Length: 525
Image (cartoon, rainbow, N blue to C red; front, side):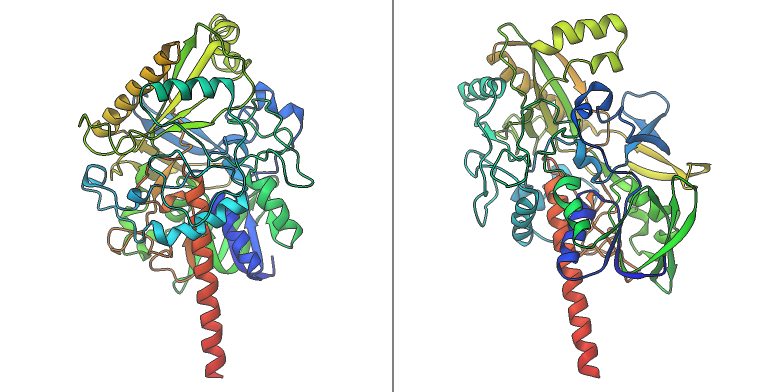
């Protein structure tokens, strides 16, 4: 492409989309690169064969090789490639990190040297802006760990389902404080928008009526209408450095294999905590960064486990999924095993009928679809995991994917503390399920990297962090990172809203710096 854009953004997830929003709003010309295509909406997207990890948008062409806990040897891992990224298939939960998460205790930091270069107060205005842009519905009351807010949510969530109400009443009887999860789903009030039909095809599915405020629906489509250039089916394969600047981005058109380059005055990398270090390492940029040795290191993913209970008295389902959370154990449960923070518990609906036959042998699938799943109440335990140097990604140059990138080896093992925190949360989750009148019968570890964090972390010390406080890649003047890879620690909430808020913060800093530079140039003239 002949045009030099003000900004080239790689990746259309929360980091890329929100950065694009802020830069386009400031009058910048923006090119957004996305490896995948648009997800077509309609009734068919809620069918079992369109569940996230079996949909055609989940590709194994990336050449990811995974070594992790309780998985012998290595297994290939796929990735979601589509406009809007994983937001198209997420459940919409939009929580802020807690204030204490920006000052993590020694029990979490360990010997990692992780530190946030700013605190909650600096990010709070951008949290509020991200909630407005994403249409987050919520209530400010009820969460015992809620950080302070500069203003209320604009809309409230709908009445909770019978299943969630049953879990909330059980938790309350145990002396806990369940609260409504803030969620980016449209339940009415916006002209021209479809409202949620409570079909149950939410977490793990694209919304059939586009009521979920995913990035493709809520952010990217309007940006394209306002003039943003979007290239779909386009993989960025190399950042070409010249004199400590990214002079061009080499791309491959996936459908044809055609190679070409694009140029931007600023380049923002927002491909995610796996793909971002993949591209940085493949481009050889770690050698320019004084914090280069940490690139690809300190991968986090939360220690997540779903706990299911079998209902003896069945609650009538009404289609909602993630509605309540319990944060009474967020900072610990007072038992000291392990010491320090634990994490949160969220309501989590069982998979809809039909999913089991895609994953299980026929007899077990029949049992799950006809008996077990329709009578299951679920809770998701989200334990904060430690940043460990041994967890991360590295290149396997002997293997290449279809666009010519070297394969990526992913190594991740939970620490003893991570596992202890998860066991403690699961114990509390089972107690809530018992109180709700169910029989806890299974715990399912989440083995995907849907909450992948770290790998190109920010910090104050240039020797132990690859990014400065404004997420500028140290050693390269015009390269920023605006996704989950920038997180020094994980907290224990869904990361999407924090990615979005930090992307807005990074974009505003870019605009301010550009305006200051233009003013200084004008004064010299």
